[in-house]
Length: 332
Image 1 (cartoon, rainbow, N blue to C red):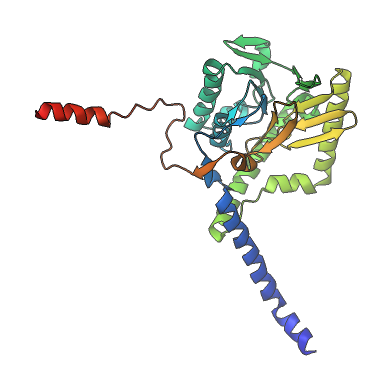
Image 2: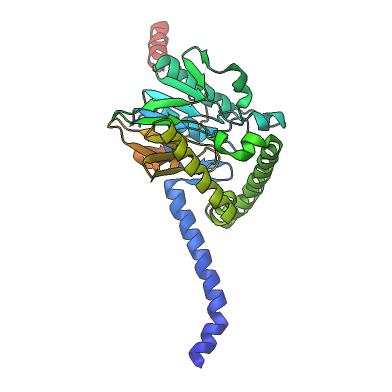
């Protein structure tokens, strides 16, 4: 009876202490490795000399122009990979958010400049596929803008000889394809959810808890969302077989994935709003879904510098030695 009384009396407090302790412990561990915050990824950043050597990078859903775009992290990622080919698989620019009055920030400009530098100075082949949020490109496709090609779909040949069909994926979303007004309403609802998520995670950060994604939890728990994703993946698998491809690479639904569906290798690059993920093809032809947090562990890391200057700015060479020599000669 005595044990039952103590357990019944103090278990709520004990559970609360345990929950708080777990939350603070998770936050401490996240701080060591770097962590997501309402304003982006905080903590450690890649060193300037750290690079991941791959053959191809597939990135989608950066949503430049949206307040929730993690463009700074996307720039970090692109600057610290060395590749031969970069595939921008749709929704890189969020024209819908810009039409609703969203602001274009300096970090969004840096992303564009980073891609241009990769293409012009490092001879990286750049393929840009339109998405539903940048569907304004539809009327101009196919189009070549200097070294960058704009297309609706692309077939990628891996080093192993397998064909991968690359599409954004909105064509297999019945809402985006046939009910544009409903897709726009859903986009507004998603933006509202992200705004709530930012406020909620500021409170969590104040309490010492780690970042928590409301939208990802909803997608994982709501049966209709889960079944929608399953249908989406199945349709893309069938389309890949129809195009005589052994794999398909897409984005659109902000759900990163790497798995085999029947005879088709299904890859979804996720997004740079919450998932912060991309698909890379290694030099041996192996494909990998890589997340930004894990990417930081791949390359050498160091504490984030205080100076948030343009990553593409050309820094002037140090002239301290020359100035000292000139001063010495003048004194003579």
